Image 1 (cartoon, rainbow, N blue to C red):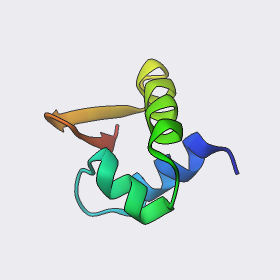
Image 2 (cartoon, rainbow, N blue to C red):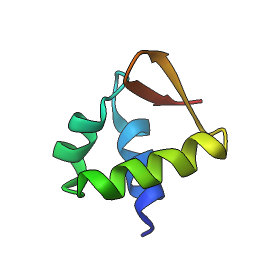
Image 3 (cartoon, rainbow, N blue to C red):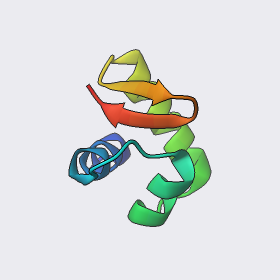
Image 4 (tube, rainbow, N blue to C red):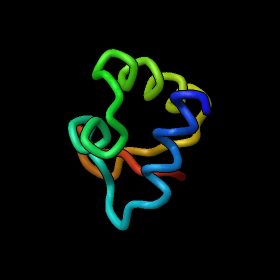
Length: 58
């Protein structure tokens, strides 16, 4: 599964918005991979930030 989908699924399964650090713990992915995937998800307008540094699916 692609990194962006792994992260997006982790967000969908979470009951609350997640920080990059929480995503790292849940998925086991490297921080650099997470940052790249988060940029792709933001650019694709699939995630939103309800508060600073936290993300959730739209």
